[in-house]
Length: 79
Image (cartoon, rainbow, N blue to C red; front, side):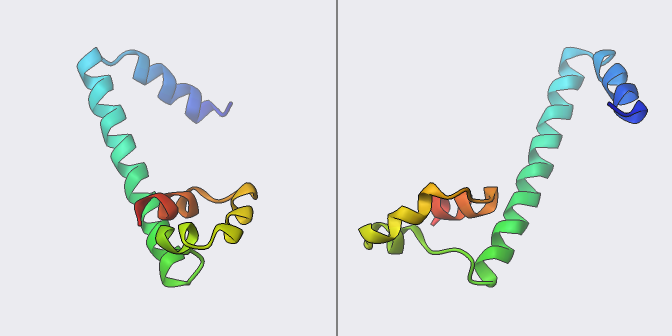
C-alpha cells in the first residue's frame, strides 16, 4: 500500500463516527456519479442494450455470462 493511502487511512481512523459517515456518503455519491457518466457514455456509444430488448430475446441472454463492466451491468438494470 502506498504511503499516501496509509496516511489517508490513518486520518480516516481519527474521524468521528459522524465524520466517517459523511465521508463515505460523499465517496459513494462521487462513485455513483462516475458510474453514471460511464453508463451514459456506453449508452451513447451503443455498447448497451436496453433491458426490455434483452428480455424479449431469450437467445441473447447467453452473452450475460461473459464479464461486463459495472456500467454495462447498471445499464441493463436501469433501463
